[in-house]
Image (cartoon, rainbow over all chains, first blue to last red; front, side, top):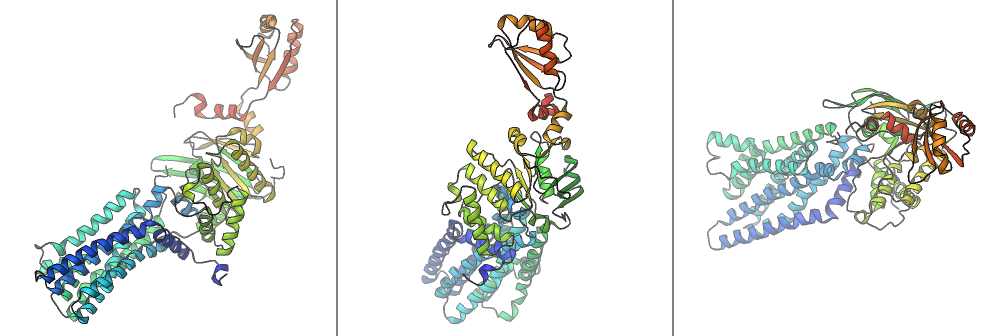
Length: 262
Length: 324
């Protein structure tokens, strides 16, 4: 018996622990992580092969892997958070949770923390790939910093967004589709050649969008070898989005309802 | 039935409760009270508003009007109110992963119990409700077992007020009997106030101290079962058995009787006459006297008072044949 086992635990911690167990002791979290690892492995292999025959610069290969890790890692956390409440609503388990004497915000906070671990696990998986592919310790350090800082901010923002959508969606399918669509829309500007980061409007569009800003940061630092000192501006929208969307997700918790009660 | 269900202060006060979904008034100024140790039957046809009453009282849906007090806690303090209630919803879902014990342990912690205490209570409840196999996954539970697990969850905080929406759904007769016995025990021994929504009116007659019948969001009758039956104005029935040759004289004798309303004859059982009683308890004597005066000797005459199911049908729109 431990000292903590005889004391009541904070409700959000109870929820978070339960969600973590549900995510990682069932096949759900591991299956998503396996998919992430598989895609990253294939991509890393292709990027390495291209670098080997000089189709890609070594830095460019690392940049692609880091960008993919940020995008896919965010997607894994987004999928989990988008299912967190609408999934319970659809499975009929939400009512019992809402009947418990737990403040709605504690339910949201607990679920948010659990979903965030999906990104943390993706990050842990991605780090060795990046470290191996990096050409020298300097590049590796840059890549790790970009992944940890920019990736975590982007993932936090989108995880909160997924949970906010999930709390107001009556259908799990709607929640997942809407959340993934938002991620794709946000990621698109950095992938479209028509939107140039060098033009004034393009730069604003990319900087204002947390996902494209994070991906652009990876490109600027890792591929274009720009100085960190000039890139901090690209972290503003991810920081603002992560903060704002987390506040929105928690604020929406007071409207957390059974849905379809009629 | 609990004879001591008359302590002065109600543990559940529902005054003028209104629940609205868009344009639909699901609960229309519903008022009732229930005391500790009382089993209160909340009855009504499908769509009458019973589930919405429970959801309103337990803060699951917003309340558009009225006041509520559960063990002294009002709607302004939903967390405290919910900590005083246990609820088994009608359409309760269960996680596929995990065991019954882990499920209850989780909810025990949500109700503020320490892990050890939650675990011990979970084990006790599972044993009491016949789910002692700790290691069995919920995914493998039958519907009846899930229903019992839901009841365990509703009891994990030992609530002073327990709301049960169709608690015996999916249970076999023995299981139903077991649950009803357990509920009676909770009311009499632990003084738990139980609000029971069910369509099993025989069970309600047997265990409920008081009932309320809802229709279209309103309470149309409430009181003890006898009071509700009397208020419904539904007549009792009598089954008279005479010699087959005496059926015609008996019918003539009872024609226009103040005690006998309509008569019906069972062709499959010659000599049996079903009598709808027009009066109260004195009807039997009047009918027997009229038969004997006509030279008819009854072989048997059984009286049946009106049942709760008769009152239910008479008081609700479904009894009048309204489509639902």
